[in-house]
Image (cartoon, rainbow, N blue to C red):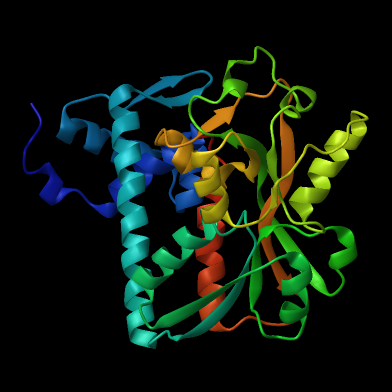
Length: 312
């Protein structure tokens, strides 16, 4: 029977050992990672198993693998160390008085999920840092980045002609979703494609934007003219409101509009062939060091970008 006092008695070294063995599926590799001998690793595992009264690992000729109990404990150990790391970072920030100002350029794809999540996390870790966000197109934002008015740009990574003097870091690949109001007739199409969707009016992105250029190329590849567009707009709020009141179709980077789709406020047309928007990430000035505040935001952007790799 499990000792209810084990939680008060367990040592971090024991949790670290359980996690290392689970991640490496090997006592030897876990020992190398922890700086322990294989017998020492084995002894720690036996201690934990004896204390809990369950078997955590199964040793086979192919390695050491977790039982359901072992997987449960390893997952909890991982969460414990993540929380401890966050506490350590918060204490460090408080001790160092981490503060400052970060100015970020946001493209439509970056402003939907990754950037807001990163800013919220940053404020929790370092309340003294202020963040300013400027939305725009790459043509508008890149000069400001090069001139030092912006610390970074978050969104779809630029075409190579815009990358001179910049370094880019991709986070994930984004799709383009075609969005309508619930009940729209296009939702009943068996295999909807761009040709079939031309029968309805569209809200098209502004000329010279990446999204517009991608749509133009997609229609051109099919020898099709662009659909009739009563409105050209990059306003997410404005486009959303127009969709709710009309039979218009509008293309969005997937994560920009997915919350409304999940909530049932808008609907996504399941296209026969997906259309990809391209890599979303961060653009920085080359050979220009970031401030401590900007470095802190970049760490949170990377964490949020890594989480965005998972599907909806």
